[in-house]
Length: 449
Ligand code: ADP
Ligand code: ASP
Ligand code: MG
Image 1 (cartoon, rainbow, N blue to C red):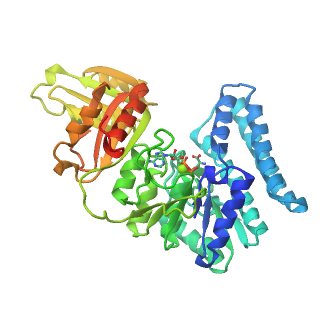
Image 2 (cartoon, rainbow, N blue to C red):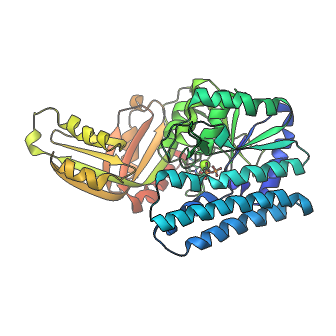
Image 3 (spheres, rainbow, N blue to C red):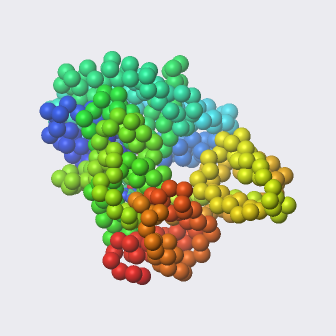
């Protein structure tokens, strides 16, 4: 059972989480928790302030201290608060010294950022374990830094399944089998040498999937603040509808193209072992949620959801002299490869290629190299809007409906045909929401724009 930041955002929410876990005690749950809502953002913001030598970093320390203290003192009574408050203080002291280091050195390496960003989960697992105990459920906080062994890719570390499996069998499983609920910190891990890492933003889902695969669990439950995977982000379109069942492939596609409800990498360890994943709502626990299954159910060729992702950069490289020549695309990709910059969408013509990148950090360096291959144009502040579903390549008229409904939006790039589960297009960031609403209306609200 994985509880996201929104599900452990306040003392009251943590109490209902404790109730949900207690009610399922006979299924011997293992709990994974995110940091309290907003804490990871706060920790990272503080680090950036320290790096810029902005004295406001101190405020981040106080905020981290006071929000956790407030939660503990509301949640628990009297002396039972003491060990938890001491734990919060110790970790906030650690945070302060990390920030001081960043401030003094004017340097923030990915390794240091991971040590900072993971502090929220190291606190929240203790708080949730205490809340469970308080509700009469034997529980023990487990620091994932001692369980999830990862490689050294700070900021997006990959769990090493074999080593992690050994730890899971040695620590997590015996607790659960003995009737004590392990409350594992999500998002974080450590290298073989014990250096703190994180699995990337939203990574607690990944932790849940890795642990679920290695235990192995009978089911992985992702508890969040919406009724499941929906036809569109409900924060943007109130008419969003729950999708009762999605296949792993669709869920991965949706997550990858921006349906933040599930971390993209979440899917893999679970798929490989055929473990069902369910997305459930802490605020509405009796709702059936969304089941993520290994194989698609009935094969209806139609859109299932609309996803979008902002902050995209489009790179266009054109080289008129390349007409009829070969090797151009390979040389362009070689540059992206060398700068370890993943490309999401691609469209090519005889003399040009356009592609989208999510993380544009390496772009200035790449631009010069790409400039040697052709004329380069960079469009920033773009968004990818994706229609995700099944059997698109067999569906006549789908593209027509999509573009008809987007007739008022300027589409910069189109990607279709690479898979039959996705049609993606690129629009300016400030037109993305309008495009998403129009597509949702076309396909899910029964009315044609
Ligand atoms: P948690 O803190 O539980 O990990 P997240 O904020 O990571 O929660 O993910 C849940 C949020 O994902 C929802 O509040 C919702 O706004 C957003 N979201 C985006 N796209 C979708 C979608 N297609 N279906 C459901 N939720 C979505
Ligand atoms: N707390 C981490 C984040 O905000 C991990 C997670 O919530 O899944 O990215
Ligand atoms: Mg999340």
